[in-house]
Image 1 (cartoon, rainbow, N blue to C red):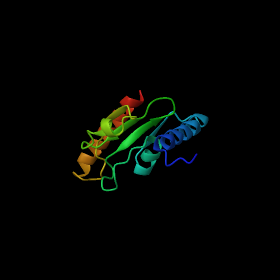
Image 2: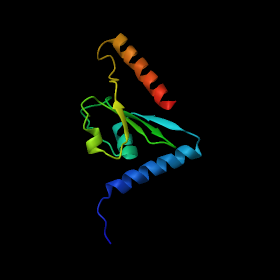
Image 3: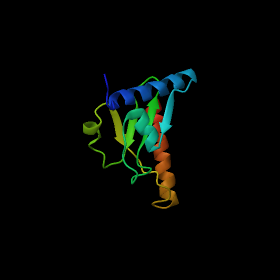
Image 4: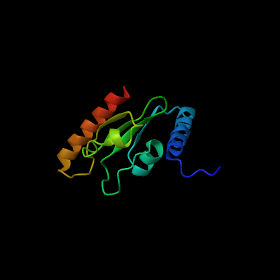
Length: 117
């Protein structure tokens, strides 16, 4: 039987391969910030015109958490397999000046720390 592109299978196999390697190497979580990697691990893509606006925590033993830009309120509808998602912080370098970027990165780090606990 010929099977066309099976996106759910591809998404599940990619995540399973990553989790296997993570477990073998003792890596409990990854902070993933590039679109191709998030697409491979979670099946979510946001387009090239929105860099630095999405990132994810991908876990070896738990469901991943997607951090998507504020315009992604439709995430639960378009990717129902992603159970956990949050509004992302923009990490665009110096968009509001160096102090704003520093503050945003500190808040991002605090939020990631909370999720890791």
